Image 1 (cartoon, one colour):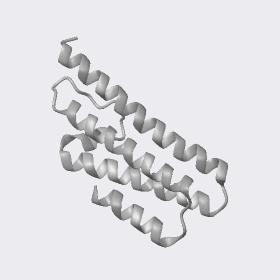
Image 2: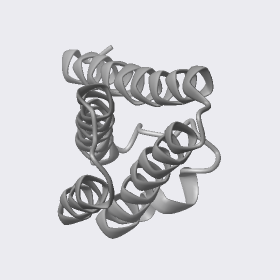
Image 3: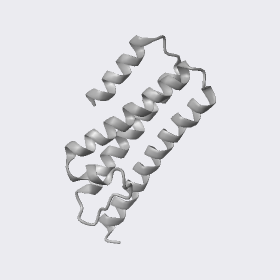
Image 4: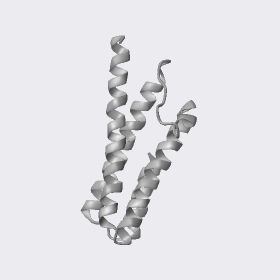
Length: 121
């Protein structure tokens, strides 16, 4: 969580940030935190297998999980700010929306998978 706060403070201090950018930054951080939490909950069960081949090597420990999600979130936020600064507003919207929808969808999928394990299905 310190990484998210650090990135947000750097972004706020670097330039005047508008409400839309702040909304997307907080949305990305929230979706990524939810995905990390649900992934950690699912990881504790034997039947859990990470579907993302890029994330799979990081899922062996809680530290790896934190590194993976912190790096991904930071990269997404910084790329969004770079696109905004250079005037690629449509591409920025697509990039930020994709990150939020991807992490949010993954968190929902993980929570449903965990609920099915709890039910014994």
